[in-house]
Image 1: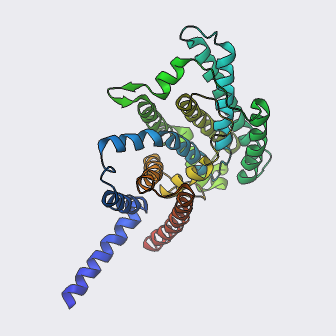
Image 2 (image 1 turned 90 degrees about the vertical axis):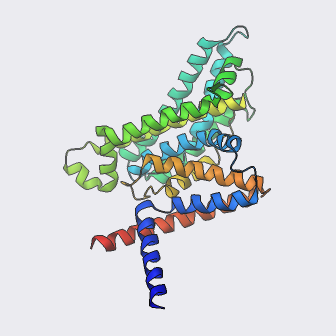
Image 3 (image 1 turned 60 degrees about the vertical axis):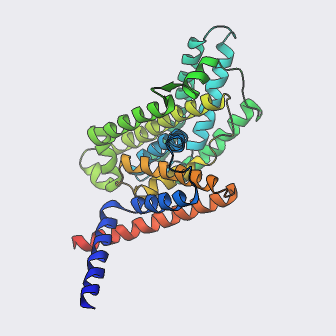
Length: 337
């Protein structure tokens, strides 16, 4: 009996240490892989996993963008409308400049540039409102969501925009390299870029410092306001790149895309261990968090779970992830003491 008790004690200690070090994400991934593997023979096939990777690319980009803002103790609920406005402006510019003949690369370049510029401007307004006007991030970005969504619908009349150059959709929407979707390669490039930016640059370290203790950051000579504005602009630009990929895949400029991305991006960050209070988070965990959400959706689709019920599951995962992360932080504090 004593040996059995010792085994349970060792197992409990192992599980506790694993949870403290790795967080909740590995447990979620393990349960999902086991459940869906038994539920469907097609789940763990190479084709399905590559499909999940391709479809998770958009969310990975938006989640990394959301993480940058969350590191500074902010939130960006406008990522959805940044997707929409970038898509609308880029597609309208391409349609206006393309003659209908040839590859239309000039129109594609200018259209993408216009979309990125609009996204950056939205991020700039968000950052200025939060940093200089002292508007809480939740209110500022939520207000901008309403404004930009209204503008996108006004510009388009709520109608999708067609007629973009075929080269744009053929390459950035459905192109492949070495048998793998070009979208995945582009996303991998941005993962490396954001990882280097966050972990190896002065600005990235300052984001952590601002989120960890804004008063201490100010006293150490960091221009907090400028770096908060920079975080929102950087976040918006990454989101705009995701919008261009979505636009290429859909072959239309959509004023209604992106409605679910604020919740999904926050959920991916929370599952990946990013603190809502700022100063804590890793790029690789956020990438896995976003991949996990799309993996869950894919598994539920294979099990023929309805889309409405999938929304319930994502909401539950968000609540559980945040609760588990809070509990993990409490355990870490206890160990340090």
